[in-house]
Length: 269
Image 1: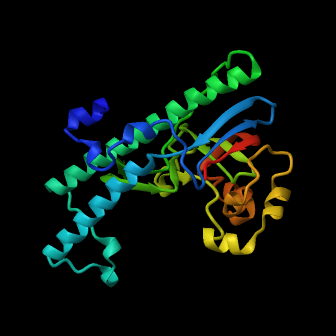
Image 2: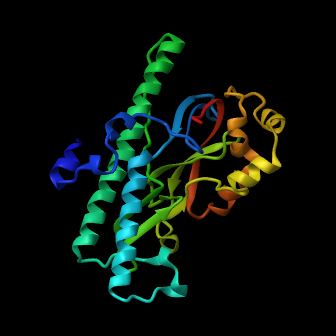
Image 3: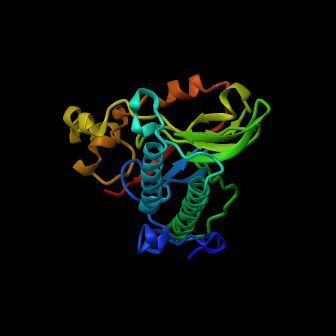
């Protein structure tokens, strides 16, 4: 059990009996590990993963609680959409959710740290020399935090978005075959100090599988070492929005510090 879980009295085994074994694991979908180079041919080890299965189970449990409470309190939700059910601040249920959500967010951060330590170790073994860790950036992209905006204390959820307050370093990945970016936040108050986390999907996974072929994936990945398998057809770069357009649209949100091009891409299926 993590120290944070002990302090809050939260037992994560209620959601995932062997959650400890997932610490340091990648997952599938758009999660990745990459070896990339920037515009000065410097190597960046880059990865993307989150809180794995335990975070999702925590979220689903509290969504169920919110729906049940809204039913109990005869709350009329907009358009009768049960996905808009909520937990009022000041209730025990709200406090339980916030505590467990923060645990999951911390778990996600530790998961990325553990993975990066392992990637650095293996990369050093492969190149036959130590890796000099000059800069490290670890940022959330699906999370909630209490912040102050426009004179009010609010709970801000960034879904597919990163904190881009003034001077804050961040990462904005493209797809498995396009550029990624190291950025610095501009602190745009109208955007709530936020910026996009990545390109976002243009095609759903099922539509991408119906539209694209393994040969097209091979063409898109020329020059990049990756695992050649049908499992990644739905991750083909064409299934995502144009990351260059996304970055152009985000010009008033972040400053681009480095552009990264991958030479090795690793995904789980």
